[in-house]
Amino acid sequence: MLTITLPAVEAGEMWDEEKQEFIYTKGFKEQTLQLEHSLVSLQKWESKWCKPFHSREPKTDEQTIDYVRCMTLTKNVDPDIYYHIDSNTMNQIIEYIDAPMTATVITNDKKGKQDGTFVTAEVIYYWMFSLGIPIECQKWHLNTLITLIRVFGEKNAPPKKGSARETMNHYAALNTLRKKKYHTKG
Image (cartoon, rainbow, N blue to C red):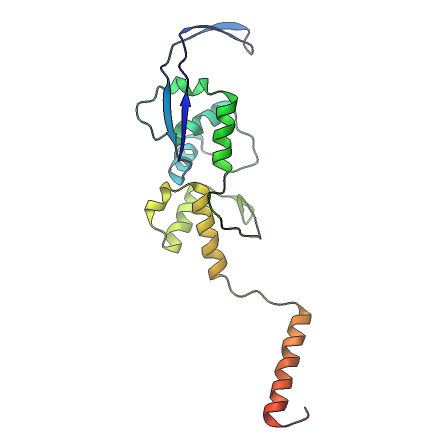
């Protein structure tokens, strides 16, 4: 879980560089938000935007802000306060989202894709239920949950075949043992 504190904002007028106009902003008290990057927040965002969160398509500012809303566990937060998140705080949120949250490292990385399709919340739920991972894990940091699913995949995968040289060496060793066992020359 990530806890961020957004400073108080006074009501007043601000200049919108993009629209080249003054806009009125209402004031906010200092607000502390608890954020959780989890399967629950991912599912909320994807159900609203109807697109995979983990895709190469860049997100608009509105989509990014909305994902922070979906991550928020704190109750009764004014939705306009998210527009006052400064770039340092947003970078902190992005670092939290990208953090592995585990010491486990899996090397054959196909991050974000499965058979050429993007991983969505429904695919992750399918993996969870197929592997018998309890529903409570949907509230884990998403990267930790994905790592657990990948560990299941690695541990349940059939043993990898060796190279041709390794196979030849294995057969040669077996032949040597059999020659010795049966007292033959081959």
